[in-house]
Length: 395
Length: 71
Image (cartoon, rainbow over all chains, first blue to last red):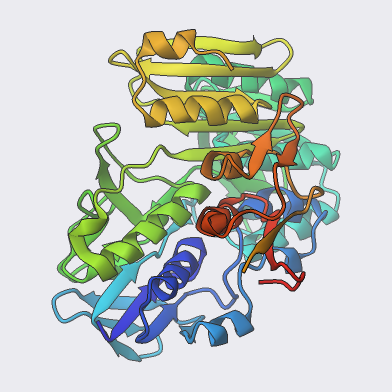
């Protein structure tokens, strides 16, 4: 392999580039990104950067020097617009073409929007998004309406409350972060938000966002209207795969890969954009978490260089979310769980660990300010420990 | 050739990913604080410590040469 193009210059793309070099690839290496920025870390955007605690210079993941050291040709602010997977040719927005021997797709996902663009209505995915919301927070708004109580919505809500801004957080599900942690645990989180003065409205959605030149109100599906001049929409992301239509790759919920992260000969995918069968959970998934971007990019880069011998990519996914003074962590998958038990601490203190089981095995662990327990139970999930043994484990 | 592990405890939030990767070097104890079991691990630990550097959610770990210069 004489040349490789990594498409997507965020966390997964950067890790792919680093891994290719550390694994001994000495050929031509390109890194393509649609943002004008150097690769940066997204998690602080909904927390420290949004709160104004951190200057943006703290989030860069790499410097210009780093790319010189790694001998990488960067193409920033130049989105990839087409791929020919059989010819392994990538075309960029500028018109440039990269004719290579291998491709890593790490184009991630973009925030889902509601309605037409309207001043005062924001999504949060990029540094520019965070800067815009930060500026809106600085103007001391009377209230912010946050649509969606998944992790982004919940973190933006917590950050706004920390700044003393009133928040109405609306969520279609029955609890915040329900899809990730279930109804019972999501309800604990709901109470945490209410304890912090959030006007949390569950089982209600946004019917319409109203305003001419600027947002004026949000109409909810229960018929009520909330007046506001600031809205943050956190209703999920869409994998960036439109540019791959006609490429020859199989597209589904993301770029469809095999168990090793291979999408087609000479093409691998990693991070928020990749859908693949995870044998550990007998589940096909697309994981939107920070740790997966790193581990999957590492695996995909090795797959590209070393072939099938690298084996299947079957991680136990892990993520964290910081809301107020709660550090919430989850390892594993809660999909179709049939068993549940709090194994340490208690809900009242908001400091506990809980495990989830499926088909008689432990499949996930959730911790609220219990990092050590999450890590220990994650090891049990790794080794496919039985539900009974997991319940009996003591740490 | 040996190396030094440095933890920025202002950034560390005890996510314990490092402990999972390199338990011989990193330990989050009952008090929920991270303890470095050794700040000069064996050379054969380098790859695992390097992985911990990369996967720390707070970028709180770094590796330096034994003489202190950053790697």
